Image (tube, rainbow, N blue to C red; front, side, top):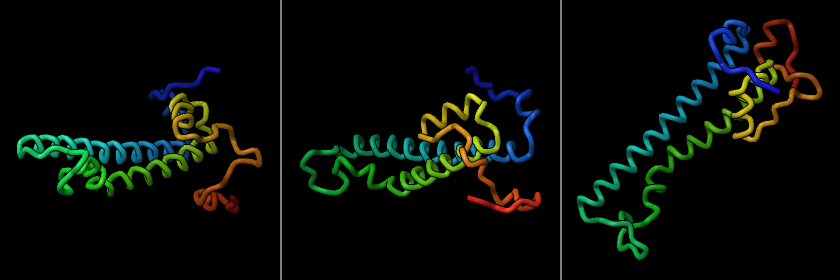
Length: 140
């Protein structure tokens, strides 16, 4: 089965809910990229500083700054946020499939990466708060 590439033509045919889900997915991707970039920049700064100052990560550190795991320790907040964003991406991918975006190659690839089932819910599509404004009741 061939899946559609995300293009201007495909986007122009999407309904408001589908567009909102894709926008949410894009915002999450941007947040994850920004955090990963911060970690990378900080890692480069620390590595450069360690070389300049003569500090090296050691198997037998004499201080916290020499510990081989210091970078993971210092960037723990950003790494935690990335984990949270990954969970938000999983939920958004489920929503994407539920609102009929499972035919997009992007959604198929990301569902595989994040371990999300790309088939629509067998008991009928899940409903969201946005459905309440359309006269439907929310179900889980």
